[in-house]
Amino acid sequence: MKMILRAVLVCVVGLTGLRAAERPAGLHDFDAYVARVQQEFDVPGLAVAIVKDGEVVLAQGYGVRELGRPEPVDGRTLFAIASNTKAFTAAGLAILMDEGKVAWDDRVTERLPWFRMSDPYVTAEMTVRDLLTHRSGLALGAGDLLFWPATDLTTREVVERLRFVPLANSFRAEYAYDNILYAAAGLVLEEVSGMSWKDFMRQRIFAPVGMTDSLVNWLDLPPGGNAAMGHAKYDFKDLKPVPPLAWDNASAAGGIYSSAQDMAKWVRVQLAGGRLPAGADGKEAVLFQPARQKAMWSLVTPMGIGEPKIEALKVTRPNFRGYGLGWDLADYRGRKVVSHTGGWPGQVSKVALIPELGLGVVVLTNAESGAAFQAVSLRVLDAYLGAPATDWVAAYAELMKQGQGNADESWAKLVAGRAADSTPSLPLAKYAGTYRDVWRGDVFIEEKDGKLAMRFSRTEKLTGDLEHWQHDTFIVRWHDRSHNADAFVTFALTPAGGIDQVKMEAISPLTDFSFDFHDLVLKPVAP
Image (cartoon, rainbow, N blue to C red; front, side, top):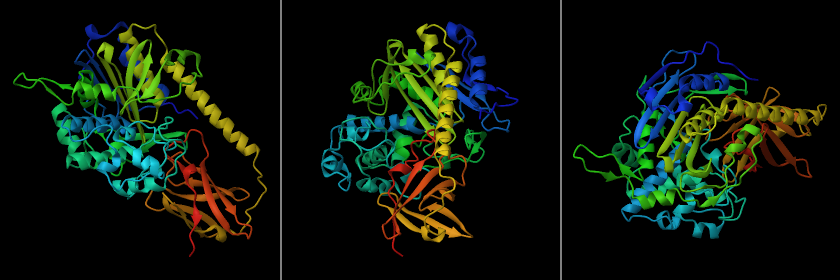
């Protein structure tokens, strides 16, 4: 299953090279280490930024923007930072709080009177703070199919459908990561500021921080611009480019494109407690007040702590772990770490800060390899902590191998338990029709030439062919093989032999949680 990048040419082009005198002992071979990460985890290109004590000591690119093409990644190459956008949305609200226009504990309905959750109590009590802290009662990734893959719904249409998304847990009881409430937070920001979220990011954050290259949407990139192309392993096997995604209807959750150079500037402001660099006149200003920083970096929602499955990773097990406002909070080797990750089709990233050391590291990649950003970021943190050398590449390679083995074992069990000689209960044409989920909308199943196909309304990329699995269960094979999200489609019949409902479930445990097919309850729509 593992594909090794052949003829890897590591191009190193940066804004600021990590000069030998500035390198901690653990980073003397950093360029060679990054090259090893690229090869081991099949990453065509990545960019790294390091900030220490207010200085940008590295903002550098490695490899190429797109597999098979010569253009190198440099310090100004744009990547989708995905959920690292959440900290920008939280900061935008913090700016408005400094101006007295909103407060963390304002009820959402005070700002968006039309806002509704599926439970009236939760609707009434939901605050701006709750929108940012993953404790709403929604299940993991609930509602993501409203905008992932890209849909033609507006942001308001996405958030309005929250009233139909069922809660899986009690309000404020436990952590479950979501994106959709950050879309709601973006609408609160727009309502309070009188500006679009995009304009606010450009004018109130990018401009004062000096993030001159950053974009709020891929569509803003000029033709031939300096941007990385994402890559995914189609069918979990073959590494290929993924077409860029322009994500408009949940941008506040993950829409920003940025570079190592610009992210270094962002990290520098974060580590300075919201203070901006002095201007030409020598005067300092603030993006937001230190009190807002403290709130964003204070734990609100505790998160579970699991036991690492690899011996070498046991040192990464934190003593505390939770979520603040747009940031993950934990400890590592006795130091508080403020961090976040981001995942996008073909691109993943990580930002990690140790405020006590004035240290920040950013890793942007153009492949779907969390192992890569973990191996790079931990190497940097260890170097500045003076920690014992750890072969993070080997450790995460072992973890990936274990995860793939578990997925293969899961599939083997499914195959072994399959009634391969069973047949559908109904003629194929009887399964065709329009099915409707109360929050996601219509899904069409069509029969043609003795075959079934599935098509999601409002989502062009969710179309695929159905193949019989067993009894009244089929597998949908999506035409876009970069999704890695094939799913079981099971029809439940009525006593009279009609179709009562349809349920879906991703086949592989490696499928991204944003493909929340399991939350759908599809009911047939009468012709």
